[in-house]
Structures are given as structure tokens and as C-alpha cells.
Length: 159
Image (cartoon, rainbow, N blue to C red; front, side, top):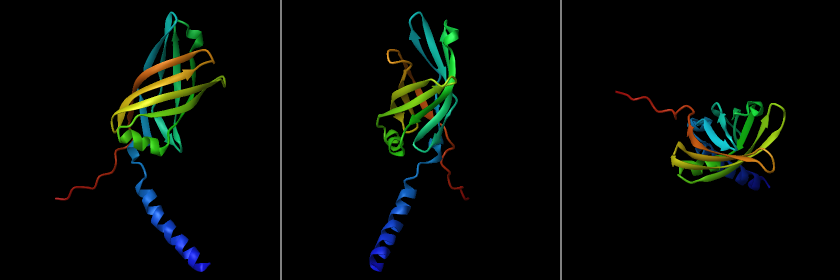
């Protein structure tokens, strides 16, 4: 039994450093989504969001949606997108990912969100987001994203 415990502890010791080495650089701590706009019947909806902050399992931010000319439909709320660390590594390799999330406006109404991110390089790309306002109404936004967290630390130059 003791040998089994020692073998298990040794295996865990080997795996732990590998997981730490797989940690994502700080540049993935924030992602900026460019302001976006989509057309609706006789009008448009523009959406702005401050940078999204990385959290376990994804990103979170707030949003402001302005509906022109129907200003009485304007809303604010919170938005959470589910993106795993593995999906972030896919983006860094230049692979397209699909994601889901949810928004909740100030009145507590939920909005299902689905999207696709297609990288143009390791830190930026194009993003398409569908926001399901109701079962029958969905808004489609096409814009860009850019990871904007602090850059990875570099060692000082000697010399």
C-alpha cells in the first residue's frame, strides 16, 4: 500500500509542473471587442462593451445596446462568454472556435448568446455573435476581437 501511495505521489509531482507550464500568458487576461452594429427592421442596434475580463471558464463584461430609432428598447446588462483554456490555445494556433454564453439585462431578462471566433493571428481576429433576444428574434453582430492583457514578461537585457 505504501508503494502505491509513493508511486501515485511521484506521478502527481510529474504532472503538476506540466500543467503549470501550460498556463496561459497574461495577455489572455482581457479581450477587447470592437463596437458593433447590426440592422433591424427600419433601424439599427449598436452594441459597446468595455474589455472582457478573464474568469475561470471564460470572460465577463458589461454591455450597452442602443436601438435606433427605438430608444425605448435601449438596454444595459452583463455578458458572460464560456471559453475554455483549450479553446484559447486553439485560437493561438489559428483555429476557429465556437462558444456560448448568456447576457442578463438590468431588468433580469436573459439573452442566450452563441458565436464563432476566427483568428487572424495569435492575439486577434474576427468574431460573429448571435444574441437571442426572444425565441423568434436574434441579432447577429460581426466585429473583431483583440487580446489586450499585459504582455508576457520578458527577461531584462544585460549588457
